[in-house]
Image (cartoon, rainbow, N blue to C red; front, side):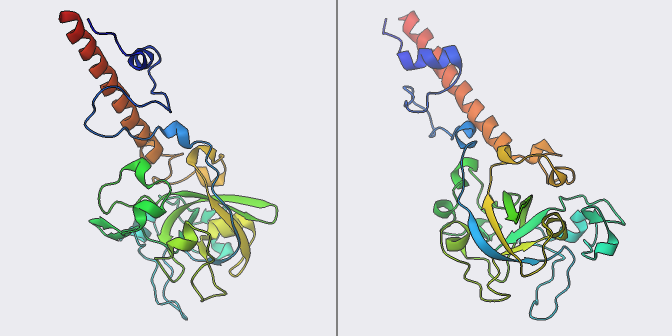
Length: 271
């Protein structure tokens, strides 16, 4: 009878795959990343970035010829939100419009990059540029940017929000969004982020204000006004948490690895 590999005994006894060891069984695909490996990631700050305010339902005007009835990833954005996200402070209650309760998170932002070329393909640089791309194993044309959380700071105020649209002005500036270059956009004082009225009010800023922002893992987002509303909000609807789906894939992989180990053990005993 052949000796049972120690690494498989460890897997069977504790149910996890050691981070530095290669599995000793043949599997049809590479192991998915362990979601726990990402909980302590600290993404770099983008400092002194000009922020502009935008809102769902905003009509084209001035130099802006883009309607915000839809987003880069949602053709029915205003409908799915539940209505017009009126930015007038007099028409707002707390961090939402007075006349309806939003069905999506009112704490949203836009950054100048779209990872999707169309509904069936990603942009050529997306897999290499986006730090979390491979963690989620997206199908072709499925965005891994939509819904991503960021942290924003202005003075002594902090806000968290979800990435739900692309802009301002450009949608291919991955060198700024994921790299260390300044925004390529030259409009509106080289604005590098659009923020919703809720984000504006939480931070106490206006269009043209300077802010600092960075990506954050969902596990590092504290509860606050940004965690209270929206079917797209994993605090409200855990089913939209991409890390939960990644964890499920990882656990499935571990179960398959364990089952293969048992099968090998039974085969060895029968010889």
